[in-house]
Image: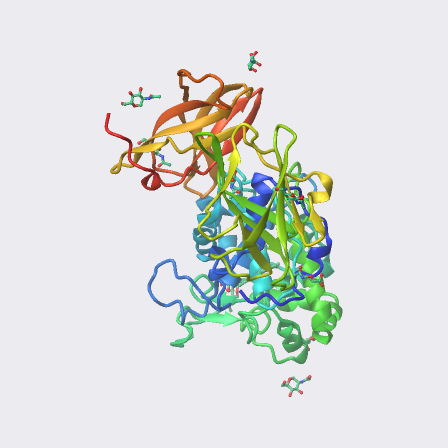
Length: 525
Ligand code: HEM
Ligand SMILES: *[C@@H]1O[C@H](CO)[C@@H](O)[C@H](O)[C@H]1NC(C)=O
Ligand SMILES: *[C@@H]1O[C@H](CO)[C@@H](O)[C@H](O)[C@H]1NC(C)=O
Ligand SMILES: *[C@@H]1O[C@H](CO)[C@@H](O)[C@H](O)[C@H]1NC(C)=O
Ligand SMILES: *[C@@H]1O[C@H](CO)[C@@H](O)[C@H](O)[C@H]1NC(C)=O
Ligand SMILES: *[C@@H]1O[C@H](CO)[C@@H](O)[C@H](O)[C@H]1NC(C)=O
Ligand SMILES: *[C@@H]1O[C@H](CO)[C@@H](O)[C@H](O)[C@H]1NC(C)=O
Ligand SMILES: *[C@@H]1O[C@H](CO)[C@@H](O)[C@H](O)[C@H]1NC(C)=O
Ligand SMILES: *[C@@H]1O[C@H](CO)[C@@H](O)[C@H](O)[C@H]1NC(C)=O
Ligand SMILES: *[C@@H]1O[C@H](CO)[C@@H](O)[C@H](O)[C@H]1NC(C)=O
């Protein structure tokens, strides 16, 4: 990805959340993706279209994922009612019943969902992904940076209809946007900001767009402007100039020229201001898009604006091997200036008052990109993990970059070693994959119940966890003075699983469990 240096400048000044947080850690990684990440790959280049039919017309369809994603976010939001707090960004558009309504004509919604629900999970709602899809499409394709919050909740049923349609009159549109929470001027802005991407297709709107018989535009899309895969103010300059080809302005049937009625509804004042200044257009769109994606049903509590964590540990589950805890992973630093002489140290505390340190080395596996630089546990590339004394364990980390201390404002980076994986786990079968899976519990930690949870999705892509296998405590053998006791379960693997333990009424989860095929096979009995 080729983000410009200025792109996240303002984000870098806002305060970040405290690591670790299962939901925010997942959202932050999606919001600030590493190179070659899943979502951005659908926007590279910005005219990319992923035909769900796989019929090979991606290059010549006239369509783009970016346009589909932006329209989908708007249609999901447009059911909002500011008075009773219903509707909004809640992924109700994922229900077939809502997609089948005349106000949601076309297959852009199912296209969008078929891509974005591939990364939904119990940590990340489909609604957050629809908002994020818009943010990344705009930012990646020449637009301004947009403040992104997380925490949207997937609706359990379709919303009341309410998306505006082109044949409706101006008063209906003003009333519709007022219900959604936007003034007439904001309506002009939102429509212009959205319609800088994409266009109107023949298939769902045959009365607006005829068959174009263009081999480079086989889905016959009449684009809103000549730069339909990029964010710019051409939508306004061409309109003001009188040279626009926007099918909702100069369509032959005046009834469906909704953009014409909307753009002219304040005597062209707003559109003129957009045409005069790309900068003004971009900043207006950034504000309106942020408000649009933050339009959620009442009762939904959004997070703070998600900013890149300056320091983000990416740790493997701790694993016990005899008297040793294997501590592995990388530390991701944001926006480090290049400095081969920099000394990066990890300092960690244990349960018995010890303080330890180690110098980290630049990752051998991950080269810096997209403002991210990774350091791994050294001291040499042969060392895959740090060996911690299991009795002492680990409670908290800090990092130093030369003289600069990174400790999240004094709280440090908490590490839980109450529940750890074990090198005694082994594979009992390859096909189907099955294992005897052992989990160790730190002595003094009162586990009342332990089980696996599978990451599953319903037919609409909404992710949640399902409890699956129970663990049983292993009767202690001769050694009762060991720092950990063991629990075990016979697992078969067919979904991403976490191990969850209930401890004094709270839950701790570790995982995901790595592929069983990577485990050693169990010794023959
Ligand atoms: C009165 C309000 C609006 C009306 C009547 C309207 C109407 C339409 C129509 C008829 C299409 C063609 C869809 C297709 O052929 O697939 C379209 C496309 C689109 N609309 Fe709107 N729209 C409105 C507001 C908005 C807003 C507020 C946004 C975003 C903030 C937006 C974003 C888009 C985008 C990105 C496309 C292109 C989709 C594509 O090319 O796949 N629209 N709009
Ligand atoms: C990177 O750091 C520099 C210097 O502190 C700052 O000016 C810039 O805005 C930062 N960029 C990002 C993307 O965080
Ligand atoms: C999702 O949440 C689980 C706990 O429920 C956590 O262990 C896991 O690391 C989270 N996933 C991501 C990608 O952060
Ligand atoms: C509209 O744009 C064309 C081409 O860029 C230009 O030649 C023309 O002068 C413009 N017309 C007006 C009224 O601004
Ligand atoms: C114009 O569009 C409207 C709304 O789609 C339709 O009812 C009407 O028949 C159309 N008029 C003509 C002349 O095609
Ligand atoms: C707005 O501008 C367009 C394009 O120049 C023009 O056709 C239209 O008459 C103007 N509308 C108003 C209300 O001034
Ligand atoms: C790191 O640990 C060593 C002992 O292992 C100690 O001599 C040194 O002072 C420590 N460095 C820091 C910065 O705490
Ligand atoms: C796991 O399977 C083995 C072999 O079938 C059995 O002896 C053992 O009791 C099982 N363990 C648990 C915790 O169910
Ligand atoms: C895994 O397999 C079990 C038993 O065969 C089944 O009940 C469960 O639905 C499967 N889970 C997933 C996520 O496929
Ligand atoms: C462990 O937790 C259970 C349930 O909260 C409680 O009943 C029990 O007394 C606890 N045991 C110890 C040793 O703290």
